[in-house]
Image 1 (tube, helix red, strand yellow):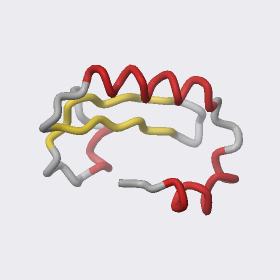
Image 2 (cartoon, helix red, strand yellow):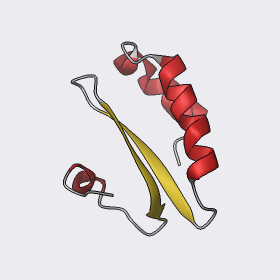
Image 3 (cartoon, one colour):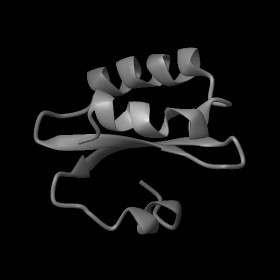
Image 4 (cartoon, rainbow, N blue to C red):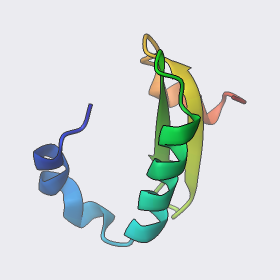
Length: 70
């Protein structure tokens, strides 16, 4: 899990990201995510945002997310 202090170290790399949009996505995902699973917001350098909901806690192959249809 990314902690606030971890994010603050890399925050400048994501200055172009609309925080209001990401905050809204986080709130939406919290409501949609089962307790036994996790959800991910992928932020691409192209500016695209993708969400992946209800992924197994054991899932660690994040590079596969762009290939998966969840």
